[in-house]
Length: 357
Image (cartoon, rainbow, N blue to C red; front, side):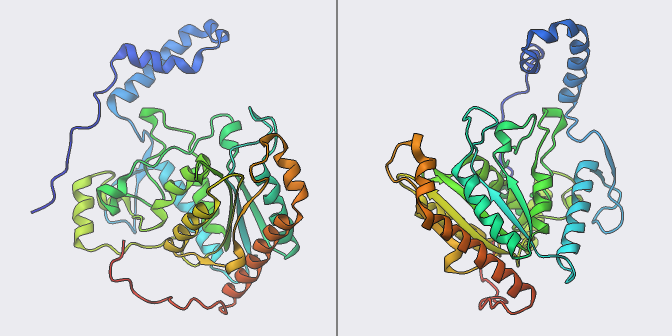
């Protein structure tokens, strides 16, 4: 007997008046009043899209290679998939220059409310200099842009995996959702940048014992890289009954980022860096990435119990932590070269876990 799909949590759809209030929140500036008529026409179109659930208004036939080639897939998803496939192809070619993704996980920058760059950004530059000096092509992913760029988002993971693993598509097909105005999502670009990288270094401050929110949003949305379904036609979009049946038939949990090297830099000023470093390295291990050695897994305090106002001065004074970050980068340079040459030993590679998930 197939599992029962549990229902009853979601609230009812918005009534028209409440939809109007939500829609107009983006046009609070009095300068928009001159275009009240135009806004009303746009609101009517947006209401119709919401009311009809037009999540993906522009689609095209999936075509050969999919379980249901006649199924209409979102052009947004198809375009993202094509870019990811191209990145994976380039990643596997020996002539491709070695590439490392540096992820700055701090939300702070000097382009918005904090008014100052972050210490994490400075540590990212320490790593960048070493990587570039080692002949690596460096891609800096600055997640602080979520706080300072216009219309840039990483929307939250919706938890499709917990319904059934095949319902989580690779890349994520939950966004954009044009009916709900869940647009401007950065993740399709971020997936491509992870796939293109031979190595990844995560750098993050500790916020309440955890990764800063931009980093955590990215991590949750990368769940589709660990077991995600590369064929949304096999579940005809988001059909939970079909996804559950697929999983129960036996699911392979493909690791789409397996074989990349990683390093981690975590810092804090009072408590939590060690636990966060362990969380991040355990996650990357689970995803099938390969650590670049003990010196590539760093957690440190900067300005321990000192004022926030002088935290950059504390970093200036701590030449050792800056050098330790450079060592993280040096370790990743060495590991990437060894991995690409087939010389990096991963002793448990090839072992089959008895309980894959």
